[in-house]
Length: 187
Length: 399
Image (cartoon, rainbow over all chains, first blue to last red; front, side, top):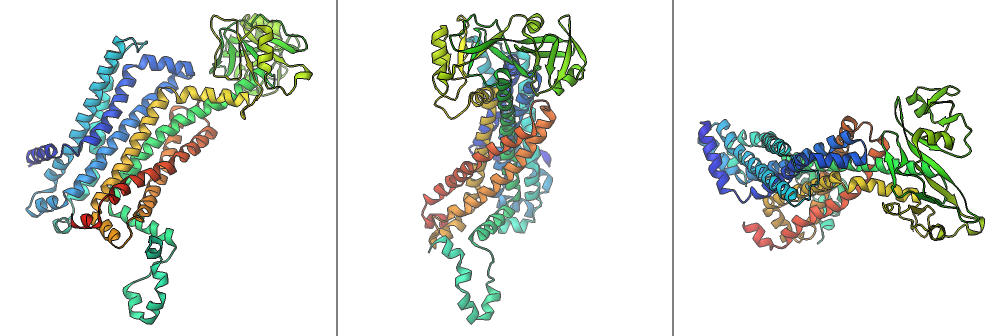
């Protein structure tokens, strides 16, 4: 049943691609910052050293970049609450026809996870390209690290997908476990 | 009929209710003023979609936490910058720094010079002195050493904190550059004060000049110009300006001049600006923008879901007053987010930046961030209401 839930979720995500645009952009912004911070860590460390307390400020920069990424991901969860509100009757129909809650949960989780994955990947790719361009034109004096870029991409995508799933699961769980009669009678 | 009239209707209809006691139980009156009722309306809506409220608050709180952390660092820098310049130059009116400039050394906690004092001769009537100010690599870490004329040879004056760091006590001795000096613990300066000759031995010929105007020139607001023109050096009242590397130095006029801020305050501002203008500042501002996007997006979703409700309100003349509902709801969201955000930032600062930030800096930063909130809450409420008011009540009711 889970694979049907997954397929149903993917199909509905395709249908709702426009609604997923804003959360994808906010996640991409956060992912862009995370990748840039990791890619240009040498330059940022130099700037942090200029401020004194290089290590502490370096850690603070990474912490704040990841926090901003999480802010972007929360928008995906807010969009999920919007999706649930729009699809209340649909959930009622699924419940009334005997579909179990787990495949419905998977179907609804697909949207935030797909948004987070593609949003983070998009932002990360833009950041990697920006890093290459900045390096080529000599704007990044301390250079752009390939290993830092890779680490940044992995962190951005992993944090986005996990955080999107974690923050979206509670509202989805509440929605799929609501009695079908309530979902069907909702205005 | 206005919203306040509608909202205060239970009080105005008391006569009718008195005439028909049965209706009182059928239509219970609500207590509290207009604001109380608006709060109850907002809380009722929050309870309808608690998960969205929690997520909106979480997103905005994360953004506020990021900005608060950066502001805490920047405020700490401002406090440090103001104190360091006061410790370095005291109350002197003129500060002449070398072409190589001066740097704040975070390990030593004080300003030190990066080059030899400018080769100037004091103009007639002016009083002043050349001051050695450099970095001494002591066995217990880096220490700023100031060579101050008038300090007895063979004596070192240092603060209790520095004495503890160097492991010496009042009346004890300290080895500096092969010389044994007697320690005198007093004051709060983070620098070690010794005689100029000993300072030069310990840190080399690095330092600056400080000077004061003749009595006849007291109160003038062009002392920098007067001094700089006479000694042939450029002058400024702006501490953010740095000396030309190929020049001979720069004269800072530390008097207030025509501005309201003291030189130390302006220096502190320039110091904290290094943080807010850095990568940290940029990233945190982007975070705040994203937090605002979450707030607006959440309110827009709320408007979309409550179209019929607002259609009914619009049709009975409550069109403009819908703004009050959203203002109160927006206020609740932003205040909750601010509380969680600043507390989270306090924990983050304590865990990640224990040596950099102080509780005073955190409290000051939290207050600064709070100043952004009214504007964000108001704009966050106006955007969805504006969208709502662009539609006719019938359009809202028929969807």
